[in-house]
Image 1 (cartoon, rainbow, N blue to C red):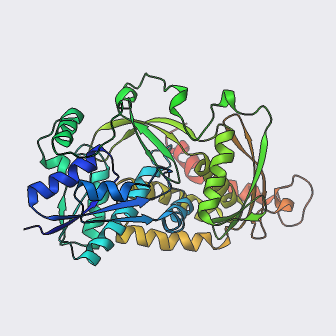
Image 2 (cartoon, rainbow, N blue to C red):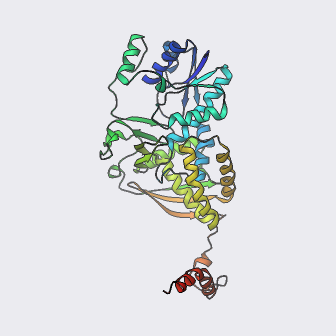
Length: 398
């Protein structure tokens, strides 16, 4: 029996109908919860709308600082990029939303939580793995997997019959998801992988063609792997990301158009805008090249791929992820310094690196005469390093 449900609520058509449907189906109280992750959507009026739709109360939580500090920065330090291109903007947000939802459920003594993710996507997994990790016995309600509605028109009819206030507007030909880190676009007209997105779809960035004709330089200062300054000015995480989104977006940085492999086994085409994140990833990787030794850097690159899978799959609150964080944080102790980037019409180029923790020694790298490295030593090294190759060639009669 379900007495009280905490529903992840946005105020859109789906979750508005869900709020009413859950009350009607289970005969229970519904508490709405909305997370502000920097999506720039108007939250004014959301409380009145939720209460009018049938919620007993609504929580609206500003999670931007926690999102940046506790989720985006660990992901950035890991170097995680899913399938080599996706900077995981939607994936990384879901565990935080679900975490806060569970906190509210415990406070409200609710016996169930609900979400609006469909049965074909990744988000259902991300929400529910977090629920299971933080409240293993709580009941999970996923209306899209249970109800009989087949599409948007049936939802609109249901809403009209029950007087549910929903936006009356022409449906966008694609769906989008926005937060502090990025905007994603998928579905609808984008399901054709040959279709080129129209320029008016993009919100955060100029096209390279419309970007300024003059290059812009930006310097990012890091401490222990975390970005702290832009052009020498200290900024808190949220302000830093928003500032880089503006700088990067103006210069056409951060657009990605990919076909990715969903966890549920379906290929999906997605278009993403991540201007600030693209700059930060580039800068962080560049700083690691001068502050990490070769073996640590190479092994960490292997870790990054696995970390990306954990984020994409919603396995944030797992022993493996916590263990990888311990390794990553150890590697970041000396990742401090400043990276200078040149932004020009969609290109983001590293043009300067400096760090008091740098392992780069000009005397060793120089072709001029020096005392630390004896070039004659290289012959013995090559002989030993190449011995297996030489032996194999001899035995095969080459």
